[in-house]
Image: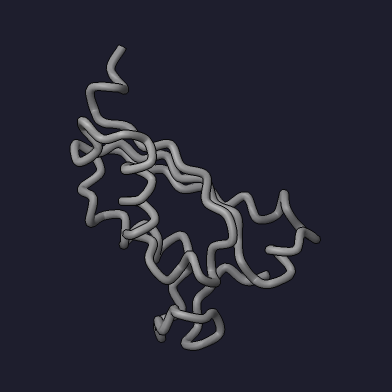
Amino acid sequence: MSDKIHGNDIPGTPDPRGMSVLDVLRDRLAKLAPTQLEIRDDSAKHAGHAGARGGGGHYVVSIVAARFAGLATMQRHRLVYDAAGDLMQGAIHALSISAKAPEETQT
């Protein structure tokens, strides 16, 4: 499976520059003004899985942003899914999310 997005190869992702899914997702999550952002591609761990056969990858996102302060987990995840947008309809099959406000990361 290629992690590049080419034109209409993946539904809903008309990026002609051939950016990787990681790069596109990172760019989109930047809208949330994260102070920390880590994205890991775990697709290889799911080879042979139905979603992987369909071309969608498995990704793990760890994001810290002030925007999450005061929000419930579901609301935070909704913001991440909304930022990912149409990637969730093809390029991303599964997305594991850890979304925290800055004050939740301090020890």
